[in-house]
Image (cartoon, rainbow, N blue to C red; front, side, top):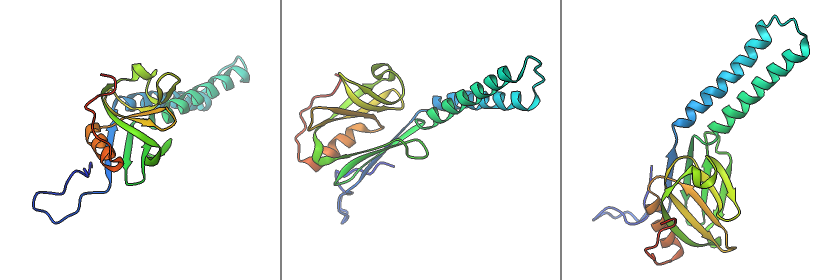
Length: 187
């Protein structure tokens, strides 16, 4: 799934790839999505087979509460089961989940640096998902592991967990004509 722009095969007449793609997946999110589906099923079961004699208001509150909690858990976790990253000559694009939402596109003209982070954890960012912390910047964290950190021209940073982040850093630096400094983010 990852196409490196470093070089074509040795002796190949193919030009180097102009697109790098990467992906990261978190299988634990499927468990959380199943819990959300269970909450929805409980709400539906309460609505259909309930024989509550204490009135309609408690029943409605229970049904609506279970269905709402289930929907939030289900869609909130499915949106961050995986992340797909694409870097071409113009921009870096991040798409989350199966629907590709939320989505973030950063023009490479706004990037002043790219660094490899050997370990990005949900704990650093306050959990999984699309995160913002004033002192750290913005991140898309779907699992613990390596990540790509972009330094933007406005002083902010954008971090994304993605497999083979070092190759992404090399690819972006090549596109921006930046020299590798050998430094790592978070090291």
